[in-house]
Image (tube, rainbow, N blue to C red; front, top):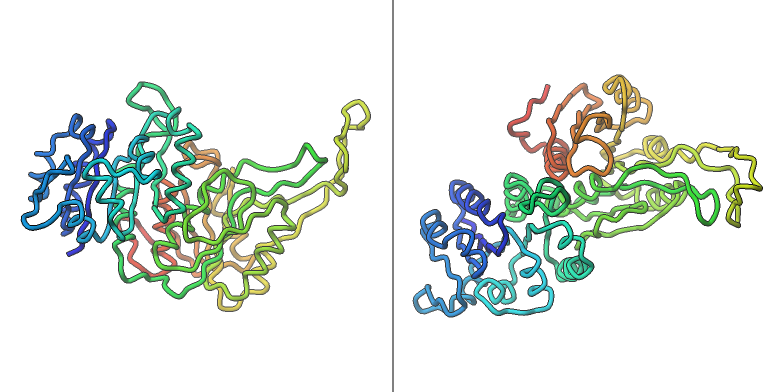
Length: 400
């Protein structure tokens, strides 16, 4: 039976931790809850004791395990620490090595993986200090489930809402999975947009954020793969344990991707590569009054088609962002580029467009398989894609 130490810190989302706790226990996991003093103002420790049958200490001097020093005991028995929610204060303390309660001392003493699900106000999330602390924790090897955009407890809209319990559960199960179905496999992913310069100031690009590609990379990493992401300009935080190759133009992405392609087992081309670039880019800023207003374009290198031509052992997956005739256009691309699978979405649908935290996709296989997924987080879409590619059962979804 795996053991999860469930840390709960002071955020209104603390009530969701009780639901998470209940579902983990039902799944046969031994859950040991640890609350901060602030968390106990939102949800009583008694709630978690009742759900788990284990102590739910708060104070570092709550020695509730006979013959053991509690925070060291928790650090040793954990297969995983999951901190749900992770407040701004808790993140700051861990990033700076401050152990001043039962939860922080336990985390700082453990060698188990640490998963954090932040939940806070939008401005607190965007604060440079918070982002710096998150980067530092990621460098230490911690895993994160990014918050989502939505209505917050302060009755404002924005990013900072803790991820859904089902997505947190999915990440916990993946981290506990000792089978590592992608162990020994090399996964190559392209993500984000490209930029084609007009001059040193301006460029042609698109709305891709890279969120889908990085979600696929995180899922592959948790399944044990050796993952490389060739990423265009994106604000998505780099992943701990994943190799990142930064590029800007379509030509740079073409070269960087093909340099890694030959040895790859799975290639997921989720980047939105520019189809055209200016024939000539000015070395100086173009002045409006001196320019005719017209630009001559040429086609960029077709990276996906080239990978299809070179394909040997690789399982090659493409993406298709469409606005009409989704299946017809996706299947045409699937066949013309010599792909094995294609993931298609209608970007005009709410929750399926660029830069969103969710997606609505249909996945088409060269063998005629069709998998239609409802709106879900991009991380959940990534999990479903890997279930399909690795032959794991696709639960609660219809495959025809």
